[in-house]
Amino acid sequence: MAKLVLDLHDIFNKGRSIESELNRVMQEAVDRRIPLVEIIPGKGSGQLKKTVLRFLQRPDIKKLYHRVEKDSKNFGRLFVHFRHG
Image 1: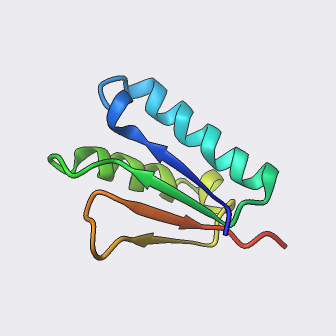
Image 2 (image 1 turned 90 degrees about the horizontal axis):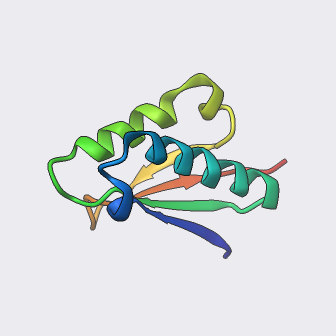
C-alpha cells in the first residue's frame, strides 16, 4: 500500500513550516489518492503531537481524510487514513 511519511523531527522548532508541511502532505495525499499518511511528531514532551492533532481537527482539514489512528506501539507516530471516493 502506498503511503506518505512526514517526519517532523527536523522542523519542530519552526512553527510556520510545520503547518505548511502538514498542509503539503495532506494535499499530496488527496491529489495522488494515497490512502495513508504517517506523521512522526516524535515522542518528546507531546507538544508537537498536540499541534498535529489540533491541525487535523480543523474543519477544513478534517473533511479531507477519513480517520486518525494513534500508533499503539509507538507514541510518537500517527496515521491519517484517507478514503478516496
